[in-house]
Figure 1 (tube, rainbow, N blue to C red):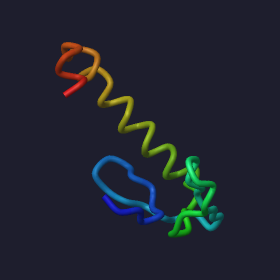
Figure 2 (figure 1 turned 30 degrees about the horizontal axis):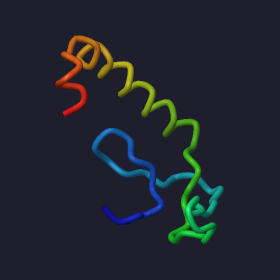
Figure 3 (figure 1 turned 135 degrees about the horizontal axis):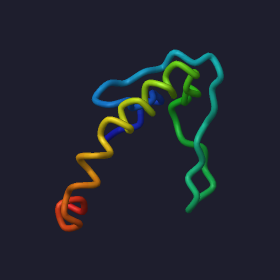
Length: 68
């Protein structure tokens, strides 16, 4: 998987935010490309809605299935 700077929300990518930042490789201290976009409140709400809907299925799954 390559870095693209977008937020993963469900099965889609989103990059509506205006604020940006660069990531740092903790092992080397070097800056990583590309520029990342901060999630907007709408994007964060969408991610939380999807997580809330997915949790009952995850909770019911056996531990060995969750780890797969």
